Length: 365
View (cartoon, rainbow, N blue to C red):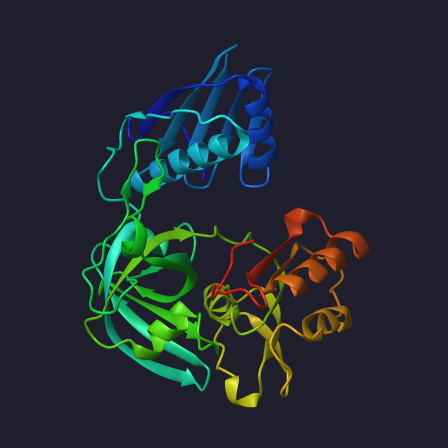
């Protein structure tokens, strides 16, 4: 999304005292080059994201940072990202960031919605779909299909939600009142009805807050939702999608949005045949289901082996490869594509959706 200086943009700025501001500019640019368009000069930079833009100017003692967004959510994302990474890259320093302009500290997060369960049912033995209802979901239909769900820590307790901090980051409730957060895909959204469908993999184990909540979800239950995020795929003539069941909701939604003139090859690792789901698309589709047949998730090389066996089309138009899987498998696929096949980073996206032995239902990569 191209950002221009127009009166419709929301804006905020902050001056941040630092001992080495130019070095912080360097680190910010190195990081943001993978997430947006970076224009750099000796002491300043401008970054264009899908959701807004940032300007950064350094003198000998401070940074002047400016954030722009086409709406409240876009502006809040820019402020959050700048603050988060300045604090990360400042090392032993603790810079004080106070924004002025649009957006008010202490206000509800513009990218937050409180949602209530409409219904829940299993679509396969190990996948449960929960329908949620909330207000003003228009923004959740653009700019990405992933959301963070916030589960109240205690069933039946009045939930406490985060608010906007003075540095642009969320301020969370303390201690036992802090909700548990996990990342999921909006499988389907109906803006007019104010409803979203979220598919949950029913992981085994005691420390699986998302799966446990989904198993027990009943009409009227409350959950928080932050988003959207994750960006959007580039246009291509041929796609290769690969993933295990945690990526199945994302792949299913992406396929439904593909145009008829493109082709897609899909490789899906699942426990067994009972976990297959119908996949709908206007594109020309080639699907292979890969069964673990009793092997634990995250212990096989099924996805990597299947990708190696996939015949890549002759380069007529653009190709794009997308995969979502366990962290170790994710690393293997990145090595295959980047080191062995020399696929440019602009032509693929490999995401770790979870980590074997980790307590989270999903992890970001």
